[in-house]
Length: 140
Image (tube, rainbow, N blue to C red; front, side, top):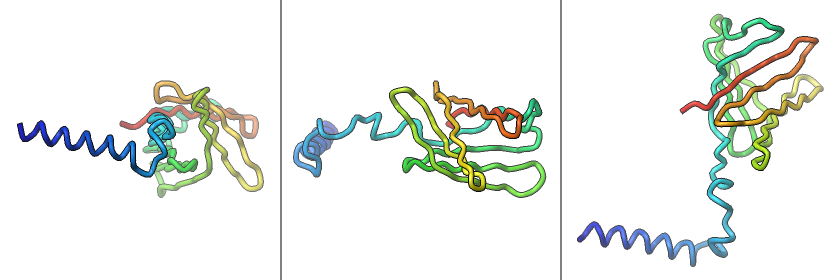
């Protein structure tokens, strides 16, 4: 009986916060999906090729983190040498499930677009006449 009253009190507090809290109304709040940004998080590279050559042979791990503020961080650990990071900006179109990464190299900015499906996406772009393919999946 005591547990039942705790549940009722907690539910009442949430209802009061929704009605009288800092929000104009529950309808004015964004949807849970938009608020939680389900695409944000960490992704691991499961396949990497450049010009047909397997790059994963040279790396222990490659991780891409999409942060909630529209920035990404790429973390790579080569089998020989020290880990390195790179960062940049990204955009996500929830309606089309399209992820756009902006990679800055010197004075040039590359726009890399891909479709996110079931927590997976593939980045493909041609640099210096060779195709770079990076396949990522979410880290759970």
